[in-house]
Image (tube, rainbow, N blue to C red; front, side, top):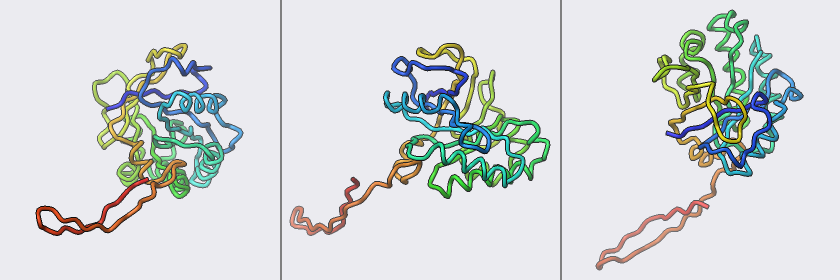
Length: 229
């Protein structure tokens, strides 16, 4: 298990050389226009990279249709372009007006966003509260994509499915950050999966193979050795 935080403009300017955490999930922006990039995104991304802190990102949704979700995905891709992330890119769905559309329509919106980012080479997931995940997201989404569940004040989330990350508190205190910050736990080695598969801005490791013959104790052995660069 790794302990992390998630940050946005609400944390203001962060003194990253004082922050001690295993990972960070950064708000990239919201809505359907790249001009809605979080005002602290660039600063937070640079801070994580300067301090060698693995990071992911999330995009806050207001989409009320799959078409609108694709526009949000395109905006998100524009903001993420040229950057590398060791943790997933999450779609943050919280608006009650969207949930009022019902489970099928909410799920269609989520699929549209995640499929667009996945086709562009990103490891993606969904962020929602435990109750909303239980009630508004169809099972195929929860089984296929990374899940980051929010549930505070409990020893374990009430979400009934599998999840890779848990946002357990909104009132954490971390050196280098004024005020409160969200606290998270992660149970999956996302950085290894992402790097090995060449996702989130990373290139897939190249391999060099060689056929070898060895003689050990008078016995002959042959095989192929693989070197990953």
